[in-house]
Length: 240
Image (tube, rainbow, N blue to C red; front, side):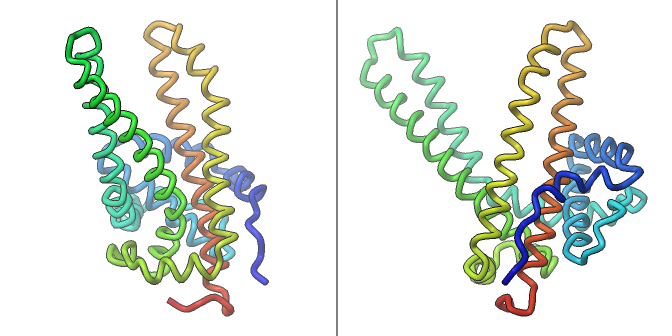
């Protein structure tokens, strides 16, 4: 029987490295620099690989930034491609929303109805697609960790075999990442509102709060994905 997903270890993981503050700060900063932020995905991938190999500590170093960039590049691009329908639906819903606002106080009631239906439909489809993508995202990441190529992210038969062979830990990782993100959002919400009242400094402080959230989610996700990879690659697991 496969080992269960250890959530508490994923939460405690960063704090077990004596140099975690500096590494976490760099991760947070890199995550918000366009293009270079692929290295933050590489940090997630490297973390997962170490956890899967039962050598999680110390956390990855930032000395080989180019190596982390290369490790995260293909997975990041694959995630963007998977998310393209989500961006498209967001654009459709936003455009329909603006159209609805423009026709609300006019005599074009028919157009208001059309824009309203399109806006609601686009939003519901966006939520549904985002949920499905988030659900299978750990399985996609695990397949990339196994093979390490761009094409492996789209090897749907192999991804499905991994998921079908171990549905419970896949669901546990998805639910844990979702729950962890929601808890962080709830904790950060009042803080960002408070900082929002502070002129000049407030927006900068909120940026650091958001960066810290992204950094925490990446570390938490990387550890859980490493645990999932270890489960999938046990001798009893189906071979890719």
